[in-house]
Length: 401
Length: 228
Image (cartoon, rainbow over all chains, first blue to last red; front, top):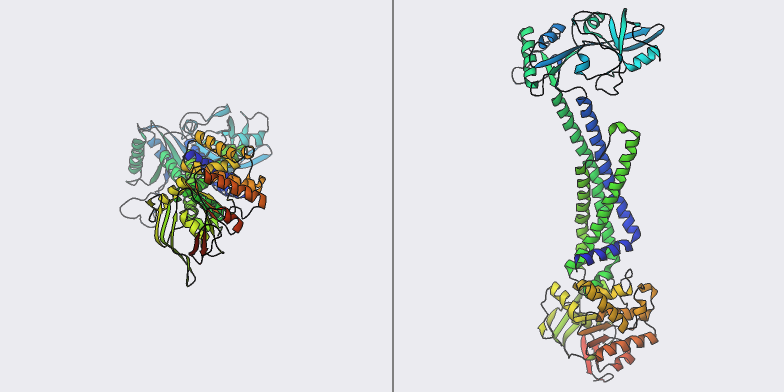
């Protein structure tokens, strides 16, 4: 029997038993569709999160007060409190040649009011370089002025949402708002950049770092954003940060330095593992579909016992009969897989329409492996029924026994 | 052509051994027309299945056209069936989802014959049995006699030397039964060896030779109607 005849014959019997075929296709289709859709979700989440981190800026190092890294050596003494990270520390880091610019950040929460309206928002104290480090844009006006970061000038920049809530459509630039118990003049409005990890930059007010420190009565910084001169300079910048802090903190480099790459890489790993897990769970349904195929094929073999007997009488070898039934199982799982890919894609499209932010798309490897798993289970679970058919005794089979 | 020596076929049913064929010696020459008769359970179908290589002997030997097929492997048996033997069954055994032409084509497909040649031979076989206008019909659109004629076309399309018919008229009315037998006899007169199992004495009387089976043994062998 040539391959073409085999496929034609198997296709004929697949089409000949409609209900059976539809049920199997349904099971296989659901399995493959869920693998495709779930991996797309996982991939979408991964890209969303890593994209978020990338949008923080390039060549970025984040300096946090306190050590949370584990290293070899003696364990830290109990009750050790890290020294504060101060504005002077930040300015000292800025002197390193590996560092292009820094943005110290002090954070607090305070009421911001204009006339009778008041909103409780995040107050972020920083310097002029923040806008470059974070790649933010202004909607109107200008950002904090350059100058001595130790000077607490009474100026501020508003997030887009805060501006709307305080001023509606009216002009804000040049007006005075009250933050806590002080008055600040509005210099500009931030463009609404949508999303950003950590702080919602729409609902925020930015003031000079020294002003924030005095407003919240603290010398400690929340963190320092450090932009290295280039990607290659990141390790040197990290070393410079450590050296500077050690000098200034009596021999202790009690800060944590996070590089953007490390964060992105970690999230990448976490989400890839998550996606694989979800895909693994979904492929259980493929195995279930495989078992269904086996069941259906077993029924098919017993329904078609006399057909098998006839084929044997007509001179079909056991191998040929086995191939016929395997071809049927393969066709069922292939068509089922194809249907599943189509349904999965349709599902992704629908989700994508409602949540474009996730920018879903099933990775090619997921589709390939789903189809491959579908085919393998179909074949694997097709072997048992096919062997049963091939081993039928022709006399008994012809008698319909 | 067919030579059985001390051919045995035992079945184990529960704790009993049923001797369906009990030391049978049989010679059939090429071109013979043999009717195999006997009461049910006498082993006549078992004999036909053994000759048709659908069933293996428990003991004894079987020479088909001078070749000892007793110890052939399953695949060799399948090939021999394909090349030398045509079957006609009581219940036709047509594949219900295939048209008449596709049913006739099946043994050629299994043998791996080229599609173009297949089509030619199927057309010829159907035309020979007056079925050309039924080629595209499904079995359930055909009468019993037509179905059996399709089955005969399928049995002859491979040009076998032997045709084995197991109660070929058992499921047909008288007229179409006679029709079918006449077709088989025509094939026999063109040189094909014909072995036919039947319990119809009238039918057996038409054969040149009748083998009467009783309890797995040959009770009589000779001209139809003769009794020992």
